[in-house]
Length: 304
Ligand SMILES: NC(=O)c1ccc[n+]([C@@H]2O[C@H](COP(=O)([O-])OP(=O)(O)OC[C@H]3O[C@@H](n4cnc5c(N)ncnc54)[C@H](OP(=O)(O)O)[C@@H]3O)[C@@H](O)[C@H]2O)c1
Image (cartoon, rainbow, N blue to C red):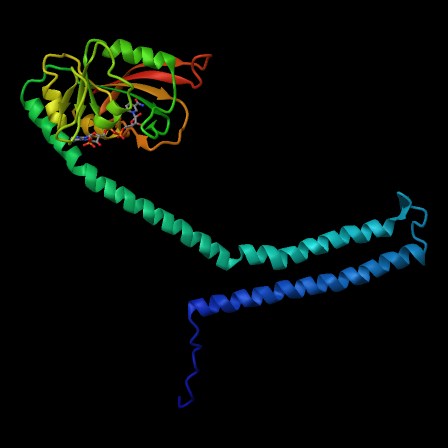
């Protein structure tokens, strides 16, 4: 009852971990030392067994006594053991692991920051297009606004303001479907063309006030103005790129997708197609051949 209270050791978790780590290192080094002693005794025993006791005296490899090879093999295992204790442990010990972990966390945090910034930029635009869609639905909709896109398995669509692949039949399909129609595009996609495409009315969206274009090309400052400019067309096409696809997915009626069945590195992506909103209505598979380095499928989606 009046006895002294037992003192509780005041060691925090980190200190405990350090002590455990140090104990582990001591054990590893002790084991290596024991291995060294056994190796010396073992080597001596092998020499005596062969030379003094005459065990397998006549057994030689390349005129060399067998115990030499046995000792060398053992030496190799011993060096490997020592390497594990001093080198591998040094490079890949706890501190190394923690460093790698910190690096990974930093990369992920950077990526999260980037995604947050992108979302901040894009969210108002997407919300605007939903609002516009509502207004359009209240008026009577007469056109069939169609997105046309070629996207990889990982939704990649472009890199360095260029397409990633060349698929002859895909270009033909693009030409056939859009022929004679209005094609709506972002300023960057327009600039990726060497010149405007024949027999199509180009509508370029930009925020720039005095953007210069060749004759016949229409420049607008909003997606809504672009769609307004296609009133006479019963099937205007949205032809990209990434920014414009993102904003127009919510107000489109159809998607003509060329799905390239591979993953590609890219800086521009198509948004995920939500299958609770879109229904696949056509699907044609195309194999690789001389003109097509990748397998792909032509898919059509219609809004449910
Ligand atoms: N695989 C495919 O099917 C396909 C199709 C087309 C394009 N692509 C690729 O996609 C990439 C280009 O896409 P991207 O996302 O970088 O650019 P983009 O969508 O073609 O154009 C972006 C530009 O459009 C203008 N813009 C966007 N939203 C706007 C808005 N709400 N109001 C006014 N202007 C607006 C801005 O122009 P300003 O900066 O001038 O204001 C913006 O910089 C390229 O790599 C291209 O090859 C692929």
